[in-house]
Length: 159
Image 1: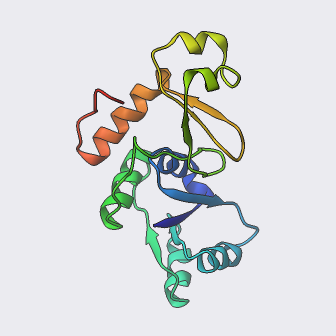
Image 2 (image 1 turned 90 degrees about the vertical axis):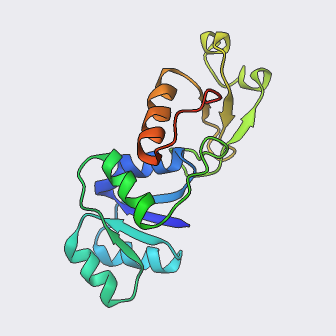
Image 3 (image 1 turned 120 degrees about the vertical axis):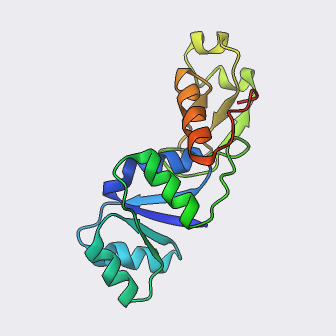
């Protein structure tokens, strides 16, 4: 499933990417550009804009109106209403460019992360497009907590 979120949902888009969902977000000059991109890329347009939803429905563009304000509630609504199974933690995407990350070894990570990070008991990932490295740092517990909260799945010890 491919999603397109408008700029009001950037934080939610980043979390969806981390949880492995192909998610773009877009800041167009006008709504027509956003709708064109959704239709062209066969993405479901996700927004909090009621008028934009009406225009999408009139043009038969798949869309979802988000009613919640907070990213956690928005995530819960998206995965529930669109029946999305999150592939996290087995699969995750770059929060910057939306490309699926490759897991790398500690040795491979040495040229991409600060030296003190290599001392952590951690898994490492690298974006093959933008070369950004990711690891199970202090933010990981928060991500795992949010994942458990929105999916009802208990946080895995392997995370």
